[in-house]
Amino acid sequence: MREPWRRLFDVAVALIGLALSAPVLLLALVAIRLESPGHPIYRQRRVGKDGEAFDVLKLRTMVSGAETMGAGLAVDQGDARITRVGALLRRTSLDELPNLVNVLKGEMSIIGPRPTVPVQVARYTERQRGRLAVKPGITGWAQVHGRTSLPWPERIELDLHYVEHRTVRMDLDILVRTVRMVVTGSGLYKGETGGWVDPPEG
Image (cartoon, rainbow, N blue to C red; front, side):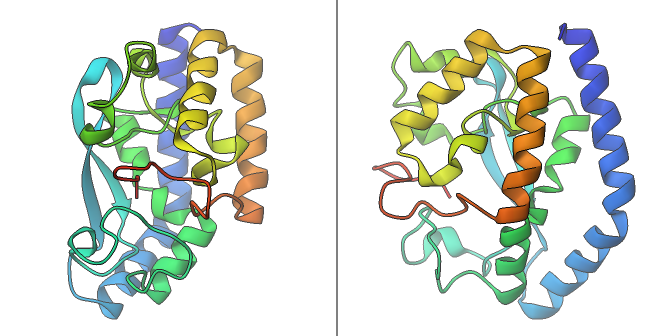
C-alpha cells in the first residue's frame, strides 16, 4: 500500500473508530475517574518513525503514578496497581482507543510496530533501528504473534520482518488476527518469557 493511500486508510479508520466508540470512551472516562483519582487519559513518551518522540495516549488502567511504584514499567497479570475498571479495559483492549487520536495526528498508523519507550530504543542495535523506518501502529505483526508474552528480541525480529515485507495482504491478515486476539484476550501480559529485561515495557 503506497504511503498516501496508507495515510488515507489510517485517517478513515481512525475517524470511524472514534465516532463508533465515542459512547464507550465517554463511559470509560467517567468510570476511571470515579474509581481512582487522577486524569483518565494516560500519556507516555514513546519513539516513533525515524526516532521522533511523541506522547502516546491511552485510557488509564492503573492507579496514578503506577510507574514509580512496585515493578515500575513492568506489568503482569494480577498486578495490584491495575484498577478494576483498568483490568476490564486491558482485557478488551479498549484502553488503546485513544491511540486513534495519535493516528489522526500522524504520529501513528493503524498497522505497524508498537511504539516503545526511549530507554528501549537507546539499546537498539543498528539492525534493530530498522524498526523505526515506518510509523508505529496500534496493531502489528508482533502483536498478532504473541504480543507482550513474547521475548523482546523475538518481538523486534517480527517487527523487522513486517517492515521489510509489508504488503496490503499482510496488513489485512494482521487486521483479521487482531480481531481474533481482542476477542480471546491472548498475549496481554508478559508472563515468564515476555517483556524486556532492563527495564520491560508496560
